[in-house]
Image 1 (cartoon, rainbow, N blue to C red):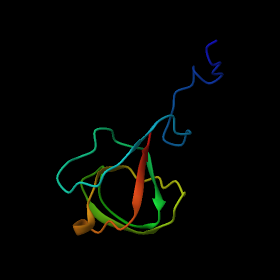
Image 2 (image 1 turned 45 degrees about the horizontal axis):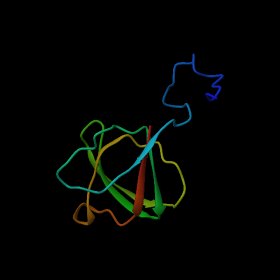
Image 3 (image 1 turned 90 degrees about the vertical axis):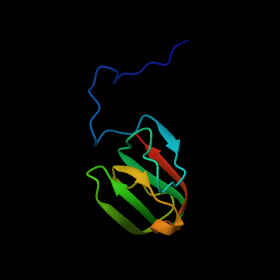
Image 4 (image 1 turned 135 degrees about the horizontal axis):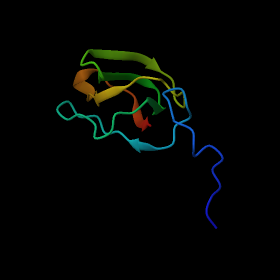
Amino acid sequence: MPILDHFSSFQPGLSAPATGGFSIVPDDNTDLGVLPRAIMVAAGGDVGAILMDGSTVVLPGLAAGVVYPFRVRRVLGSAGGTTASGIIGLY
C-alpha cells in the first residue's frame, strides 16, 4: 500500500521540513553533488565550509544533533577548519 502524503501538493520551501539527506565527506577540492538546505553533525565541533555564495567560513562550535540552516556547497577537511564529524546534508 502506498504511503499517503497529505502535503504532496504543497511547494516545499527553505523553511519546510527536510525530505532527504546524505552523508557529507569533507573534501577541500570538491563541491557537494546536492546543495543542502541545512547541515547537522553527529559529533560536535567546527565545520569549515564554502557557502552557496562562494564565501569561505568556519562555522564554530556546532552541537551534535542540531539542524543548522547553512547552505554549503563544499565542506572542507581538517586543514580547512573542520573538527566535527558525522556531517549530514539535508534537503
